[in-house]
Amino acid sequence: MNTIFPSLYTAFAGDQLVARGAYAEVTRALAADDFQGRPVLVFDDATGAQVDAPPPPEHAARLARADDAAAPPRPAPGRPRLGVVAREVTLLPRHWDWLAAQPGGASVALRRLVDQARKSNEKADSRRQASERSYRFMSAIAGHQPGFEEAARALFAADGHAFAAHTARWPKDVRAHLNELAQGAFDAPSDDEAAE
Image (cartoon, rainbow, N blue to C red; front, side, top):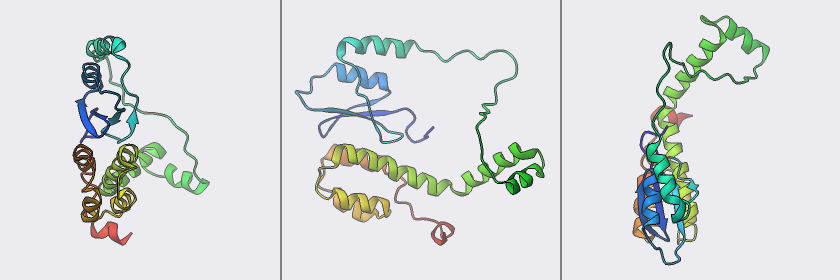
């Protein structure tokens, strides 16, 4: 789960931000307004991806009640589940031999390696995710705006100044939301990451 945008959605009618919050809140806000034929686009703030717009008003109330009534399931007595998921991993025999020789066996060694890789790549992964969510959003809502291609190049080059210059003439709400989604996309890489 993304910690910056935990389950938030943002709705735009044309270039204007009209609702933001949990999906049920966005549904209620959209059902209460008339957008005079302007297209409504809803985005998942964690990924920047466009999601299905809420259903028509006659179904919105039922969806909102169901969402409000949903309570987290009560945990069962006993030992909690660890959340272990079994999936297939394909490795060469020498890899399996090395893993088998590790303390705790292959599963423990793989979990340890993954955790180490996650820690060492955390900043780069965060930058990449910010760039990708920003690009998804801007492609869907601002692909027709002047300077879009240049802004996309600046985004992936982590050039915040050029990005700001190329998006300066975009609609205010689109630009503000895009800047929020792009938080972290322009952080300078560390010396170790720059050397890779």
